[in-house]
Image (cartoon, rainbow, N blue to C red; front, side, top):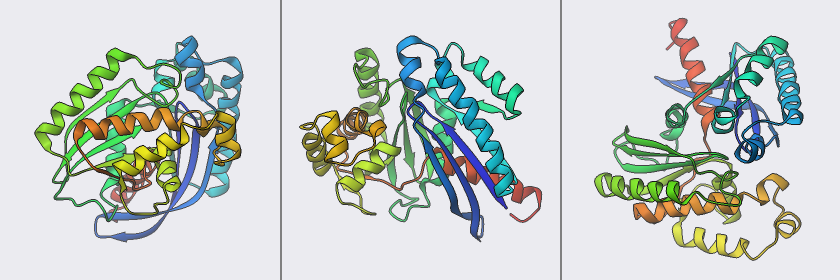
Length: 297
C-alpha cells in the first residue's frame, strides 16, 4: 500500500510518497519513497497583495498535473493535497482550488491551523526523545502561521494558531499579533509547565543541522548563538558561504525568532526536533483509514 501527500504551504509546496515499513500493534512505521520540494512561494503574493499571481496559479496547475501522473507511476492507494495559511487567505484561493479540480481532476483541501496542529500531533510521539508521560510545548512555524500546542501525558491540552510565519514576518511583524502570541504562550506555560519544546517545520530542521545536531535536543543558548551568527551575513552570503537554498536564506532568521520567542516565554531550555510535520501526520491518517477498512488494524 502506498499513499501520497502534497503540503501546499506559504513558503513551498512539498510532495511526498510513502509506503508501510512495518506495523507494530496499532502503530504504523512508514518509509519515505519519494520527496519533491517546489519553491512556489504563495505567501509572497498573498501576504503582500492579498491574492495569488497568475504566474503562480500556472505553477500550481503544473504541480497538480505532474503529481497526478506521479501517483499513477507509484500506484498509490490514496492521496491528499492540503493547503494552509496562504491559500486560506488568498482572495482567489477558492478559484484556484476550483480550477485545479476542473482542469486536473485533483482536489485541494483547505485545512485550518487547528487541523494542521492535529495532523502534526499524529507523528510527534514516534520520536524516542518524547516521553508520552511528559509535558511539552510544540511549535510549528510555517510560512504564514505558527501553531502552538501544549501536550501533557500524551494528550493535547491547549492549541492555538497565530498569524505569524517566516514569509509573513520576513519584512515586518504585526506587533498586536506578536503580543497575543507572547501572552498566550506565557499563560499556558505557567499552567502546563512544559519540560521541553518540540519544533517542527523546515526552518527548525535546518537550524538543528546547522548547529551540528542529528538527534539530540538543541539547547536554547546554542540556538540563540547560531541565529546571532547567521544575522552577520547578507542574503547572498548565506547562500554562497552557508550553502542555504535561495528560498531558505531569507526566512530562516524570521522563523527562528518565532521559535526562540516561544521557548523564552515558556521558560524551556531546549527544543526537540523530530523531523516530522504535516505530511507525515496526513499520511499516517490515510494509512490508518485504509487499514481499518480492511480490518488489518
